[in-house]
Length: 293
Image 1 (cartoon, rainbow, N blue to C red):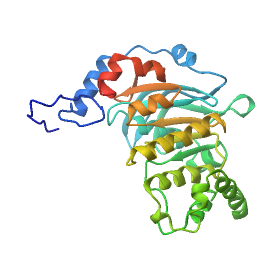
Image 2 (image 1 turned 30 degrees about the vertical axis):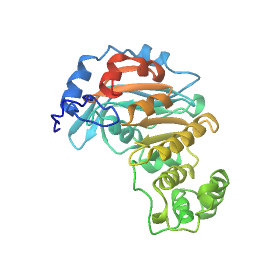
Image 3 (image 1 turned 45 degrees about the horizontal axis):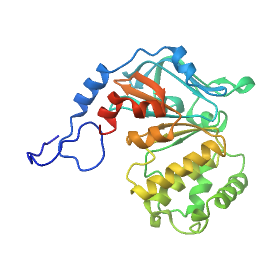
């Protein structure tokens, strides 16, 4: 990226926020992140799990077409826990979500979800099967609503795999009860919503299928700070009040790690560092590269 020669400005490195005068390139962040990688065993990942194990990935090799992005990647998340994936662009963060939901080619490895008798191998299931049978919902980065449809109709679309349209409508009513802000806009076309309201609608539409696992891709992207706080409050409520398990990709590393129970740093399709979210926030190496020092 371009640099500014204004000597009165303090340079900012990594992925920090604020007024950026000098930002190191993605390639340099990737190089430096690889240098701080720590050996991480399955036992270490297991120790980060509270309650029952709910999501496990073992030695996953996956990508798009013949291009491999993830290399022997493993993951552990407990029931009702949250995990935030951070790392430079191209590290494979969204590919993990895509693999869990069935959007990639999986060359080897396995993905399991659920607890006890409900635990199942979901590696080869289609996205529709994962949504309807395994309780996995994927919330896209942005712009996934239907702008010409009303808020109400968008919610109904979220239940397209329900046994009947009436079931989707009944669940939508529960969501309107939970989020009065959406209820007040139910007859409005989605295109007139604010950025924060659109994000709320995207999250709410995923809830119509009543999933247990939420895959959330960049919840803060494109939002004003006041709406970012609102979205994370909603996700916090879904985890701690409704018992959802959440795996999230978030470029705003500070916000993501403040929210999540567990944090993983990804580099070049591999796990570089794993720890509690609070511990990664305090890690000076992670701070320098991803939290603005």
